[in-house]
Image (cartoon, rainbow over all chains, first blue to last red; front, side, top):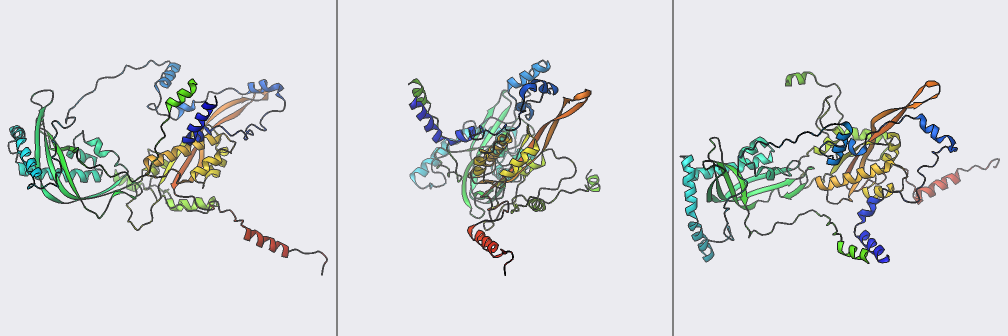
Amino acid sequence: MASLFNQFMKTAKINPAIFSKSALVFPTNCNTINRGYKHWNPKFKKLRAQKIIKVELPDPDIMNKSPEELTKEQIKKQMKERGILPSRPWNEKPVYISCTGGIFEPYVPPEGDGKVSAITTQGAKQKLEFIEKKSKSMMAIRKIRSFEEDFDIPEFINEAQQIYINSYSAMINKDRDKLIQNITERAYPEVVSNIADKTIHWEFLESIERPRIVHVRCTDVITKENIFSQITIRFHSKQKLAVYDRFGRLMHGSETLPKDVLEYVVFEKHLSNKYGRWRIHDKVIPDWMPPKEPLKKTYAIEPVPQHDSVEKAVAV
Amino acid sequence: MNALKKLFVPIVKVQHQLTRNTFVSQIRNVNYISKAMPPLEEEGRERPEKSKWLAHNDKIYPPQTPDEERRPAFVCHVKKDIKYSPKKMWYIACFVRGMSVDEALIQLNYVPKKGVIAVRQAILEAQELAVENHNVEYKSNLWIAESFVNKGNYIKGIRRHARGRVGEVEYKYCNYYIRLEEGQPPANYYNKPVMDKEILLSKWIEQMRNRKVISSL
């Protein structure tokens, strides 16, 4: 028994929140709550109580909540009380596939890209590999040309860069209508998350290397004529980024310091769609990328409850 | 439609937040004017979709330059329809105001009132919101800048009186509003007279000197 108590005290020390929350119960010395409210003679207590006609007050658990917040049991209970039959669930959903769910046959960026020179052995190897993988990309480009006759690679690269810059500026201005014209439905939630209450300052300064196509793929979805195509473009550029929180305090980056950015951006187009357009779909993040800068914010790690030892103590 | 809107400019305009803050600190005799909540956009008579109090949480402030003083974070929170009288809740709301969050949570342990439970919950909820959504780094580095109550729904009941008459019973509900601000609470928030030893001594000396011995020289 004593060991159990000790164990309990130990867990209490680790997590003082248990105690502060249970402090909703008043301390023992505060027994003055009902002082002075009772009638001195309890003889007619029942008759006095009969004077008041009882009113059914709303349940505090249900009162402030919207129907979405209520649990299934609470809803069921309420419906039973009012004699309402549950409605038939509506399971039909219209589905429109405007983009694929991910990258198919993703590009594997060579290790040390942006740092290795073409003259070294490693650099030469990379070049050779790149040429080997080119044939499949050429086939895919031919497929794109069968839908778009005037598909020109250098022209497309310029267009892609413009889409890249447009999508960033739409994100910064929180212009959701313009954003969806430059970004696919798959990338949209990733881009939009957490920007609602932030102020972002971003600037595209210059391209260090000319952007180039590294990978092209086509695939069909459901039917054979329904073709999507993805083009991966390598951008190596100088950019400036500063993120401010809701109160205008700097959270990340810097207003003055430009940084070199190497990115593999995947663009996607629904080729079979007459009104399809090239949009940013995803970014390829290589395995060899150095780990991200740690978070600047301090946060508490929640203590892990020691289940095993407690069970042992109970068994004893 | 816009031209129509311009024609019917609402006569009552919403007060500037800063003037409101000074006004509030005057009527409450408080030694502090909040600068954390610059004004929201003007709202007409139409009732906004979200409550005005919670709309403060959506306002985005312009970025600060590095040499500017760091703007304190704040979070507004409300607990609605508490089954407690607003008149009784007022005492707790005033008691907690101007304390740091940790201090308030400790002090509330020793207030033998039912409303304390709701106030404590409101503080803890607001604290969590501040840390999770409003970029507050340390949850202890918060203080209660505003804390007030208003009337919620009253449900009416009946009570039997003599000679076939009826009396009215009110089942009272209240709403509790709280705003936590980042930083340490101001010293002497309630502008109470300071009683340190020098002041006490000088008071005593003055009192002694003002004595009058009756029928003396």
